[in-house]
Length: 101
Image (cartoon, rainbow, N blue to C red; front, side, top):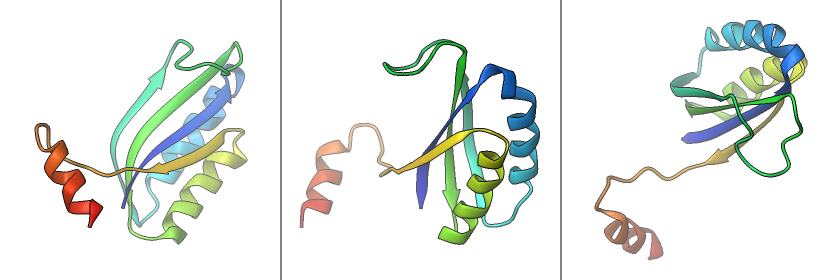
């Protein structure tokens, strides 16, 4: 299943979080499809001097998700995941109809 994974962390923790993220990326059971770090405030409520990393990750199991997120959380990041439904551009109505059943 694919998730948008958000990690917020104080800019002073960037080196620790980056190192933990590199370690987590080598763990089995997940595939990072995209990764972005917002260098500005991406949405309301993010404190100053906080970076937000947003990744699209496909996990094979909840254990794989927990292991990778825990590794990054230990480095000082607050991590949360949002399940996402993938659909092709131009097929929104058809996708919605399929899942409405």
